[in-house]
Image: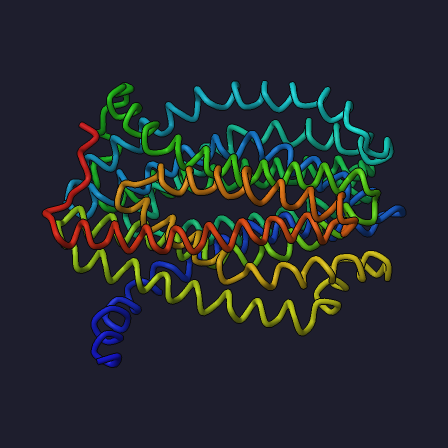
Length: 461
């Protein structure tokens, strides 16, 4: 019986899923590698803890605003994959064009919100040395907002039509550009003056601009070579489609916002404990985020495979895609949990030689080990649900469990019980266990629903 279930639900789908997922996973790892390189290189400055803490604060505050905006483009996963599965490539082009218009409107709004966040940062009781580096770093990052949104638009379009290698190329080559840019701008090489931490921000900005240009050029090249009709698509905005994109993408964006914001609040709370706890938080968060990139890539593949299957009205194939993705994500994250338990000190030494920071960050990785599996389950289930057109359920789960359960528990553990940064992480661990378990159950209910009915996703037209 188990062999038959494996053959039917996993083995049949594993090949196509992995062919799509592996380049996306590598692209996600490449995305995260940029942040890790930034942290490692600013950490080689004279005051490692202050520099890492500044990058931590600046990055988190930027992501709180910018990534929910980029998350709106996740609605393209549903629209493009559904249209492609139904054989309507022209409709994919219309979604791309309107995604570009949406990014044009969002970018100045998000940049304004980022700049308005500076007074909030100054009002927090955080060491002035950290704030003094975090604010100019944040200002620099804000200029990368439009390229970031544009990159997300072209990326979601290309993934939805099974073109993932250009996304991978853009991330790999951008990492090389970012590494050289950090080396030149932080420390003053290749004729540039040494800018310190803010130089890392300019390097990130240049890399994001480059990534957007690479994908835009590839879309034009692909259309020229294969005559897909992209250049003949209407260039006028289509407001019903923009609204459909917003209705799908806004809950996904809010989910991003709730998740990023809770870690931003955690970083702010930990910042009150000093530079070493904040630096250890950033290192542990970077490491956990790196492992998270793998199931996040699998999640994107799940959204595409589920959406394409439902677009051609093949509910059993959508079911296989969802469960295969969940099995892959759970397997990987279980291995990462074991690594966090066994070799935490080895991992932290990659970031810093400071023994005090190594000890503090290792304690946080110990806590992270207990939520790895559930973090993988929640993000993959979110992707499968997004492919089925459901972006609201994951949003509600993140709102309820992070903000009404996890963060209050973290404050209680961290400050009232005196556990410090590990206590705050313990509260977030409880939230992730609840989110992962709940979304797994809700995916099962959704799968039963579209298997029992002639399920399809409404058109954006």
